[in-house]
Image 1 (cartoon, rainbow, N blue to C red):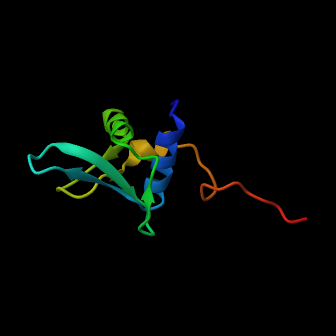
Image 2: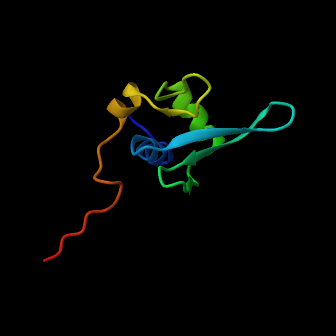
Length: 91
């Protein structure tokens, strides 16, 4: 499956234990989505458009009113990378 880079970064953060929290205004309208890593940092690549695209593709899901997390389909669609970083060899 062809997944754009911002969606890949968000899925990698979710696969490592992160979650997506939705922020709503007083009227209940969705204003933005924040992707929190397992360390508690906010991923800036996760926008409302990225959230909607991942949800439309059914790569993330929420159960029982909890924050959105990656599901089995999301893990299978994700390209594996070692800890999301460029590997460097010491010679």
